[in-house]
Image (cartoon, rainbow, N blue to C red; front, side, top):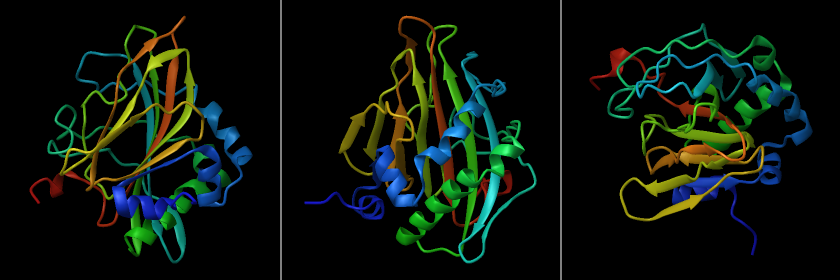
Length: 241
């Protein structure tokens, strides 16, 4: 029996976990094309908005609009905003992060990732456009524990979420947990291989990743998180909807 497609898994259980080769097959991308992007996680600026007093997260953030008929375009740089309904710790404030570097945004593999996921999600949820936010994250253990999801188990207030592992080095922990938003079923696993991707139907499931600790020496966990929303970006004016 063959494994179901990512679109089928999203429709049936609300998530799909794609090992690297499955990711390449689903998006029609050569994994070797992605490798040049990995080095761009090394010099991410520190996240200065953490409200738990930590200094363990670095990130960049950029936004795009994908027209399913014509392609993808960058938006002018904008703040990342979430309602407190979805992020009790950091919601309700505009967070201005440094944009993803121009060389990354223009890289053909980057373009393939964003448009490929958009086309995949449109198989499940047909839409003329996706409003996309992309985040490069590095969680480090230089000062002890690092928290990939300091807000705890959550939804993001979008339609679909991609969590892709870029690098995992010299850390313990970091178990990913996905639970039904309206039920008791759930799964737990640890992503260890670069270019493994977790796809989430944000209305159907809640997700979190447990803290990481240094192994024999301080380490890092790098991820790319991409969110897709069909009816515009989240912004303060929409807080009361």
